[in-house]
Image 1 (tube, rainbow over the protein chains, first blue to last red):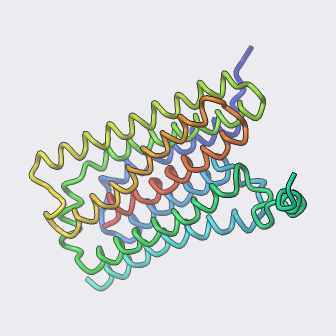
Image 2 (image 1 turned 90 degrees about the vertical axis):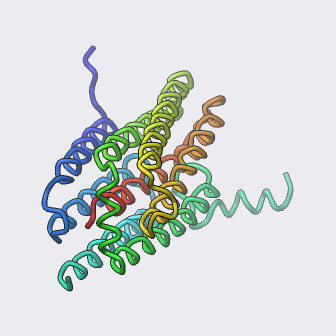
Length: 90
Length: 191
């Protein structure tokens, strides 16, 4: 009988692929707003997959899904905007 | 059944209705997310204030090893989520095996992190080396403490493999996972 991968398996594969993408960017142009933005955007995508599939909030009331997504976006957005302003001012 | 129990049964969990696991775990998770959010916010602001110190500190860290640790932790989260699916299907033996795998991978994360700390301390880096390393050790150490607590919670819910208990225990584990996903680029990569 062939093993049919489920949503959790696909999420794991996506998370591992994104982790390798982040590691590949580690040696790339550090300090550029685009490089910072890319690694933070990847973190946001990974975080969203964790809250939807691992935390199982896909079918939860939208308010809870929205609250944790807002926490995620707030931190990632704050990190990117502060780093971008610092680079532009330096 | 007492009056309070009857009232609880009629009212349900109110705004927490529809969330997996015990609502009290969600209260803990939300308070932890606020605490980690404030801590990360302080790290980001300190980085902007002292960019040279932070850039120098980041070059002393092993981002590749931390990247591999990300893979270990997300794989552990996957095993824990598989454990929930098995517990819900009443396959308790499978649930226990998945949770055991999640704990072993969690233990691997702790081992790798201690190896990383040992390497840094061996290079003469300490809590008082610079503002970067003070915040680095406090932030990652606070997270590591949560990983250890998460492993203990998984061990507690593993013995019975009751679906609600497994759901509740793994919520904490996934919160630890989510925090690391955000912490890794902010501490190691963003310049």
